[in-house]
Image (cartoon, rainbow, N blue to C red; front, side):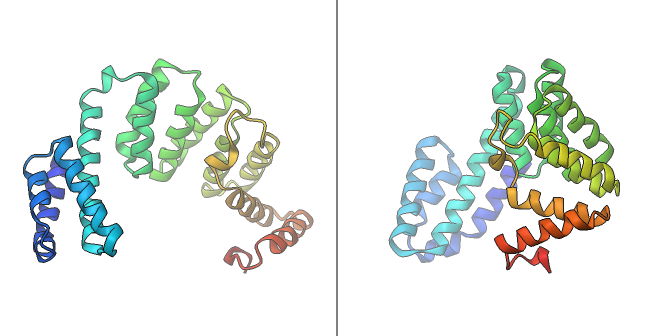
Length: 235
């Protein structure tokens, strides 16, 4: 609720800009009464303004009203967390993860870990949230659990390798990554949708260098130089 109020104040600050474009009414109506109908009327109006004239003020308003709606719906999910299916709880946690709201996402994954301890994905996503929050030791535990519950969980290996690298355990990081690479394309998920193949390749290159694997490093470097000659990570 506090976030919604903050957004409302920010949106209200934009009112002079909107008024100058002679389109204050639908915006004002939505701010005073945030029904789905008022949202759709405002959205369609400002979306049309943006499409017809590339009005950046309209784009700003669209961003704000979508954020307000997002916060409202996240609040609904939070208030009804116990009534959500496991699938919806997982999706809710993933939205928060994407938004960088790790403190809110982690407890949701923990609920799923308790309910479905053999479901690998919530362990992996919790590990990602912990990693990005800087809780590296806990991230190691969660990501290892993801691998324990699904041995072919490719992106869990990649993330665990990143965590070990940040812990300055480069040998363990390289071992983990290279084991994960043996499962590339063999897992139930599309690997490219979870982690970037390019980023994985450059992580591998970095770990080979740190571990003193010169021949393997040189071979991979030459390959990446041919594929991505302008990538700054090759400098």
